[in-house]
Length: 188
Ligand code: PNS
Image 1 (cartoon, rainbow, N blue to C red):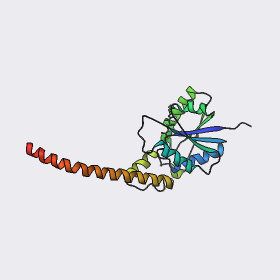
Image 2 (tube, rainbow, N blue to C red):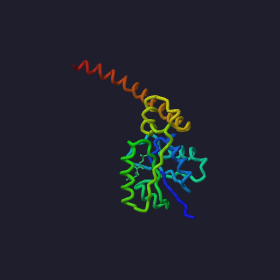
Image 3 (cartoon, rainbow, N blue to C red):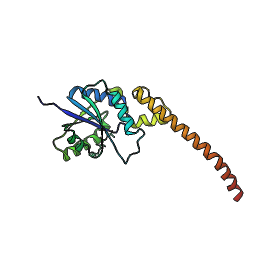
Image 4 (cartoon, protein in one colour):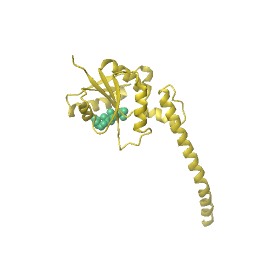
C-alpha cells in the first residue's frame, strides 16, 4: 500500500498551540509527517533554529510518525530531497487563504508532483499566530494559553534577558549622555 509522507514547513518562531494542533491533525492523515523549520539567513528570528527545533521535538515526542528537521532554500526542493509527496499548511481564516493559495500554486508550478494539503486548526486557535505571540511576549503580556509551557518559559527567559540588556543600556546611556547634555549646554 502507498505510504504518504508529508512535510509541514514553516518558520515556527515561536511554535504555537495552533501549530501543535495542526501537527496532531496531520499525523492522523499522513503516514509520516516532517515538521520542517526554514533556516532563513535573511530573517532575524526571535528564537534560534536550534531552540525551535528543540521545542518542536519536545512538543511532538508523543507522535510516532512525526519528526522535526530544518531546511534552507525552496520548500519544494526539500520535499523532493526527503521524498515527500505532500505539503501540509494551516488555514486559520479567510485572510490566510490568499497568501497560502499563491504559495501552493507557485509550488505546484515549480513541482507539479507535489500536492499542498490545507487543514484548519481548532477554532480556539484561529487568532493565534507566531507574530502576535512574539508581540504580546515582547510587550510583557501573558502568552500562557497560546503556546506550550516550554515555549512560554523560553520566551520569558528571552524577555528577561532583553529587559536586563535594555536596563543596562539605559544606565550606560545615562551617565555619558548626562555628561554630554551638560557639555552640549555649555557649548550652546
Ligand atoms: O510559517 P511561515 O513563515 O508562514 O512559513 C512560510 C514558508 C517557510 C512555508 C515559506 O516562506 C517557504 O516555503 N519558504 C521557503 C522558500 C520557498 O520555497 N519560497 C517559495 C514559496 S512559493
